[in-house]
Length: 258
Ligand code: LHQ
Image (cartoon, rainbow, N blue to C red; front, top):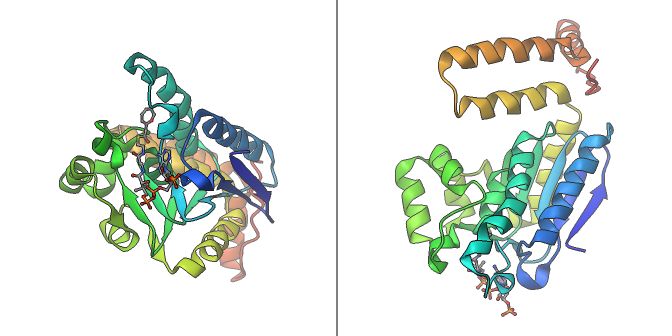
């Protein structure tokens, strides 16, 4: 078993579980993660996710023991097994909180960065390790890095392949927050519980709008916002949020579509 899935009240916690290899990624793990996303999204009681790793690492990227003699011609087929996971994480209607418990290297770093809100333990680090082994950042790295931290830092991160501490990652905007190691899981779970009690339909639409913004102009984005706003307003959580505001009471969101 490469991952563990635990049901919590309103959300699920998914834990990468190959600690002897710092949770290095392989096809079995990517497919297990995809299946876990499918199952979570099919369960109306699941309204958020936490992704974390077991042991002292979050994920060391591709398991290098599994590609050591792989001909270059087979690499695209391997990457095609990972790309659906990155696309699905970004497009999931559920908010995904990543709790980076230790080093996140190569594809492991970009797996974390594909999540919606990334927290990292102060002792954790992020390393675009690819160039160390003569490769380029994949799993969305070349797309995400310049958008997250700008051209100068993206280039240095990818070319120098040096680790960046959790604190620096937070200062640069690569991640949301660095937290004390012993608070990481509780902080991530508190965020997931809060998101799980939120307006789930609106959250999914917010993700769609932000993703679309990366490749659209202002005029198209305004049109998209208009259409998605109408979808958000049609969900009962919108009316509940407005009623709760006017009655000066906390909103009680259900996450229901209609
Ligand atoms: C590992 C790994 C690992 C296997 C640590 N594999 N065993 C590329 C190509 C094609 C298709 C698909 O995708 C990709 C994407 C990629 O992700 S390419 C980049 C792959 N990842 C890396 O190059 C990172 C390799 N690992 C490291 O640089 C270091 O291990 C880091 C910086 C992550 C952690 O360093 P340390 O804390 O010093 O730990 P360590 O190096 O001692 O590792 C602990 C164990 O884990 C060790 O095994 P051992 O039996 O000696 O205890 C490592 O061999 C094993 N391990 N990463 N990716």
